[in-house]
Length: 122
Image 1 (cartoon, helix red, strand yellow):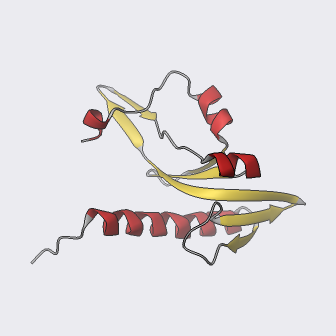
Image 2 (image 1 turned 30 degrees about the vertical axis):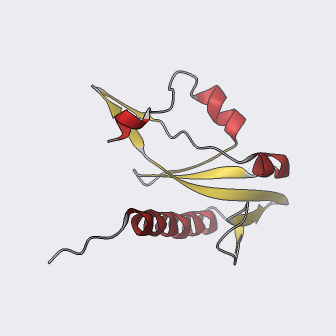
């Protein structure tokens, strides 16, 4: 018998999995990694490597399939407080890759790919 999991629980499970993958990746990349012990807050991880300090918010990202094209199309948003603090997004892609970006870098790198409309997400 298949159990139906509420959407909010699935989203939390996916987010928690992405955070664990992100932590492992940061350690593999040589970062000293510190996780926020609260369930809420502007930063998921603080990572330090070679004197550089990163404040990171983990975002689960997926490829967008439109017709014959597949592109990285995560439309992540950092909150104004996060942007003011210098927080960057650590994107955990569904293909197993990782990417650290701030919102401006993402917009410059992907100007051709608008966010999906709600109807296209189904």
